[in-house]
Image 1 (cartoon, helix red, strand yellow):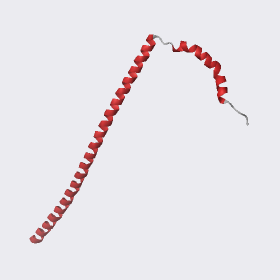
Image 2: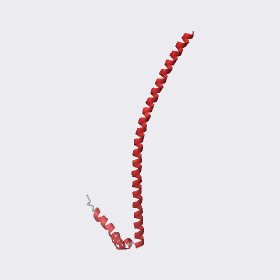
Image 3: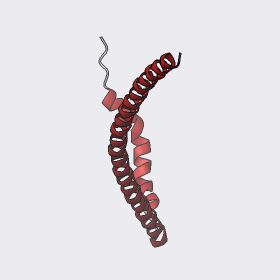
Image 4: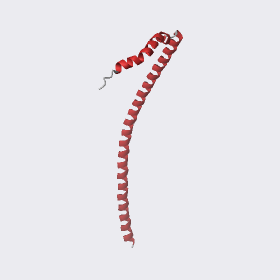
Length: 111
């Protein structure tokens, strides 16, 4: 089996380019004071935006939590009202039946 040395080949391939980059690095890394100030300002704006977004997210989560609590309360209220409505309908039907019986009895008396 042939023995491969990837590290050596990669170093050989990158060698000339790496040497050229190291010679060019001082030129590419040199920033003027204006460039650095502009970069600093952009970073500060980005940090500010991230802070605002995190605060907005926290507020949204708080509102969502409150909405969930309110939804549970409203759901329980709705269920209670539904039960009460069903009870009133049943009571109405019962009263209707009693009134129908009374009317039937009155009709029998008139004959």
